[in-house]
Length: 124
Image (cartoon, rainbow, N blue to C red):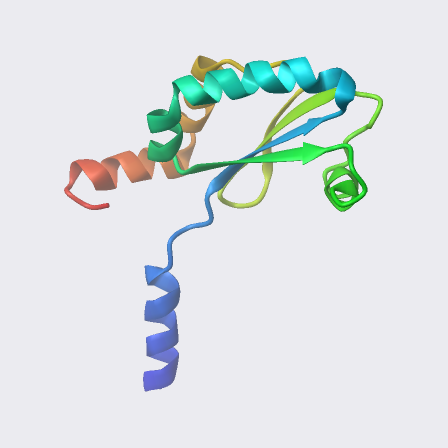
């Protein structure tokens, strides 16, 4: 029983999986990828605060499994996917996503609202 309780405490103490932005792009989508990166660079603190991991997924053989996993059509030169802490897709766009749109969507999510309440109470 003590072992089970210890395991449950360790699991509860583990940080949640980060939110993730996946940026799929081909050579033709490089300009959009750069524009998206510029937005992210200008909002580094906001990205850290919301615990967002940004992953670039190129049109290379090594990244091929990601294209399949997320069912991204290689005919699209750029695809933005926001993945929530639960691992589910929350947003998909073939266009560059503004910081306001991204943060507005995240801030409206129940998990994010709970994070902000916890922070206001003096938590993490």
